[in-house]
Image 1 (cartoon, rainbow, N blue to C red):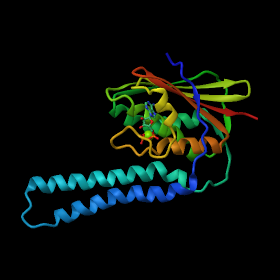
Image 2 (image 1 turned 60 degrees about the vertical axis):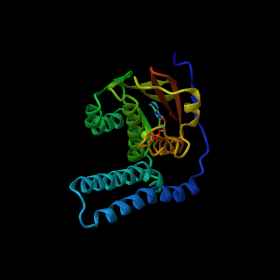
Image 3 (image 1 turned 60 degrees about the horizontal axis):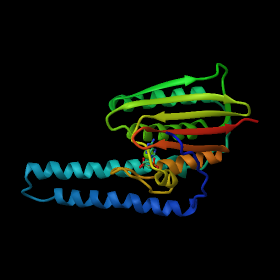
Image 4 (image 1 turned 90 degrees about the vertical axis):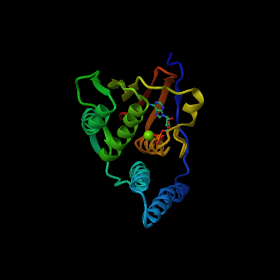
Length: 227
Ligand code: ADP
Ligand code: MG
């Protein structure tokens, strides 16, 4: 398996996105408002009270997720390109996301195939946001738990990061849809995670590709050229 490798380089309509995002956030806000109004009735059973509160809270979570996924995309770049040690960036990200992984019975292992530090130019915050979104997708692709293998590797003129999971996998047409704003197969998904990922990688002159096999898992590979 893993026969499908597609390089994903699509031009995104950045400008129109902000308007669409505001619209997406307005939806949960409208429903939160509705449930708060319902709560403001006399003679409401305890059961209904609890139900409306829960629904309002899930609206808040939904709005929050949209903002989180979108945040770094909307923020203008500092333009500051520092030397980043890929291994450190990866390990920092993992420390941050491990509690979430453990909660989902997911084990994360990391292998560095070369001893020397691997430097690229970029913004730490953005690179970490990018890695976070990818690892989060892997975790979410394994509803009953599994394994994520992270690997760094030095190539002749590039460094490679790969993220492999043992999740549900994707079909070729799903792979082709990755990075399209609002493309999601999740009930609580935003379909913005990979939009952010791809725009960050493009900004860093990197390349991202996915290879996947249904019911076996997915491998994401990121390549950064080194001068
Ligand atoms: P979201 O996570 O909110 O759905 P993303 O842009 O992060 O939005 O991902 C879009 C879709 O791509 C997901 O809903 C899922 O169908 C698919 N996807 C992304 N990564 C993986 C993965 N590692 N395994 C399986 N499917 C994936
Ligand atoms: Mg996601």
